Length: 130
Length: 101
Length: 130
Image 1 (cartoon, rainbow over the protein chains, first blue to last red):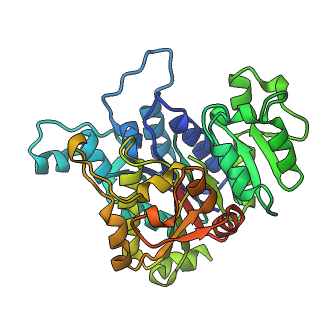
Image 2: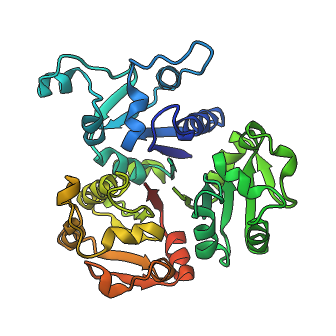
Image 3: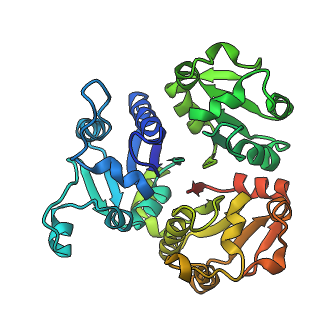
C-alpha cells in the first residue's frame, strides 16, 4: 500500500516529527511504500542541516536524511512555508540573493502541488501536527 | 474512518469534537497518540464519554506513548493497545484517516 | 489500481476535504491552510472545506488586521468560488456555542449537524487538517 505523510510541526518542540518518523519507519518495515513525506508549516524546520541537538539525544534531521537514503524516500519541503522560515537550498539562496543555504541531504524544496499530488497518488495520507 | 487524537482532553477539545461528530456513527475508530493517550486512561472526567463511544466504535491507544508518560497501567478496559506497526495496520485497514489537529 | 493512477493522474478524481479547526491570526494554520486549498484547485479534484470549533472564526465578517500588521486573508474565502471550490461546510454546534449564526459569516456555507459532518468526513478519500 502507498502511504503519504504530512508533517506540520518542527523538530523537538512537538512530538509530531517523532511520531511521523516512527510511523514512516514502521510503514517501510511492513513492506509498504512511502510515496512522499511533505513538510509544511513549521515542519519545514525538520530540514535544516544546521540543527545540532545534544549528543545524547536523537538527531531528528539526520534521521530523516538517513531514512531517505536507505529507502530512496522523497522528502519535500514546501517552498512557500520554507521561504517564510528561512529554509533554503542552493538554487533558492541564489535566486533570493542570500549568502547561505541550510537544507539537509535528502530533502528537496518544491511547491504545495506536491502535497495534493501525493494525496492523489497514495492510498492513504496521514497528517502529523499540533 | 480512523480518527487520530493527539491532544490531552484536558487541554484541547479535539476529543470532544471528534466524539460529537463521529461518536454515534458506525465504522469509525479512534486512535489516541502523543498527549492524546491521556484520554484512554481510567478514572478521568472524560472516561464516560469515551466509554459511551466504545459502544459504537473501536478505541485504540499507542502503547509507546502511554509508556513514555507512565500511564500504561491506567488504561481503561476495552481500549486496545497498538505499537507503531499496529498504527500502520489501523491506517491501512480503514478507508480514510483524519488527524484532529 | 495504484499503477493505473500513476499512469493516468489526470483522470483520477478524489474527494479531498480540508478541515479547519483553528482561529485565524493567533497561529498561521488558517492562512497556510488556505494556500493549500487554492493550489488544490489546479488539480481538478473534488474539494471541500470543513469548519469546526475555532475554525468557524476564520469566516467571521468584519476582520480588520491593520493594527496587528498582518495580512487580512478573509476575503480569500469569498474568492474560492472563482476556483470552483464551492463546498464549504460548517458544523452547527461549533457556531452555536460561539454565539454565531450563518449571518455572521462572510461567505455562503452549508451548515451541517455534527452527525452530518461526520458522514461527510467519512465519505472522503483524503482528509488534510492543519
